[in-house]
Length: 535
Image (cartoon, rainbow, N blue to C red; front, side, top):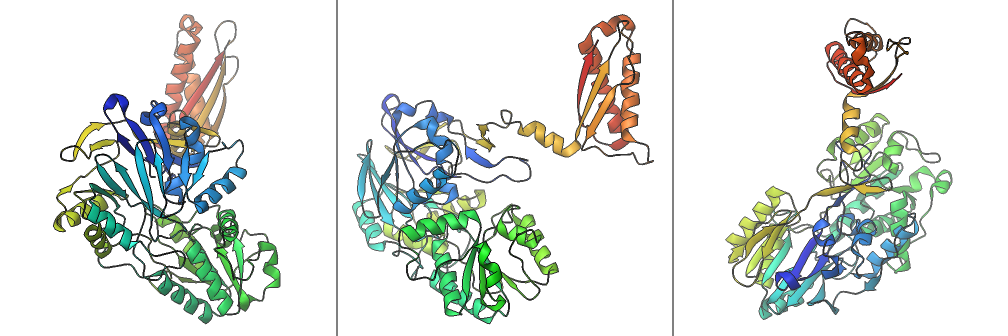
């Protein structure tokens, strides 16, 4: 979830730019939450000093929060044509989405945002039109790599622009702010050309249908799959809205030229089994994605059969392991063969390994290395690699750190508010504001509602009404839990002297405590209890 701020100038006159504006996805600890967004209150409070937002590429963790957060900042945005196309496609599909003012740039171009002179530089990554940014001010140039790798034979687009990086290094680079994702992996990543060959071999050898799941934004991989299917005499059927949206935008920009047309779900019944390649969403185990539905046999027009093959042309994002394993097991139970990157060369990362990082250091020759984009282990490993490679200063930063790059030595000079906010349906807010904390408790121990009615003498006017949701039916001895909680509610009211029952809030709290305690004694868990008392 990327949201980097660069500031220039003294504190009272400082101007800022944002580089990237991304999301991450909720885990099971955030029930009901749709997206996790960065907390931007620091720059939101001084939005008048924000000169603009620059997006390096169209991966969700780099641009996915833009429509939700832009209304809080209302500034100009710069991005490449492919990113702009995806943003527009998404905007068209969202209710009341803002009309974000976008300026298009291409790799090799230079533009100015406030006091920052910016140059976009070609790099290779697993999506069209990724760029690094050379950000220049009077005190020096910073290279913000974004996501990148070195690929001698990329599926789409040019190679990483070694000549331009070398030229920047010769001119002098103050700091390299660099991707750390694969900083713990030795060597260099294989090329996309090699992955295309691996996919072609798998598809040609498969006897039944082949379903391939990959990241929706990996247009080069989609093209490689389509070419492999074409060469094997097969047709490609696309399942999943995000895949279809990416293919539509990529086709408009010419990235799918020369390929046979992609088919839709409705065409499935007309394709002979041995001629079908199903390209589907769901590589990360998303429960509503096409692959998960196929594993549960819930697609209306599409199903897999024993002897078919499913290829995971993707990596496992940490935290998604259990969901992916569940889908694989369901498919195996159906008699489907699973192929992943440990079985064949069907995926390669879009991020640099250690040898690639060292080449970038050699080209750029930065005075300061700032490892970013990774977990703590990756950031520390990247910093150690840079120090061993002879970079004079390594600045280890974490979320919320304000790092001064110049003048003087690199130094963390302040901590600013940061964290996470949540998109929950049509509402964006903190965990309290969107109700996540209480929802998490509900998911753990359920909810009990009790309605107590007192007569004009403040005695019970009949037994209370009690409704329990998500609560065990009986205790270990088989006694109904609702009856146990009901008896506790009656006992709580009876234990209060009649004169004190005029305090209805006191009655409600006594009943709440009694019901929770009774549930805990009988079940071992304390549900959320809501009590209504009327007289």
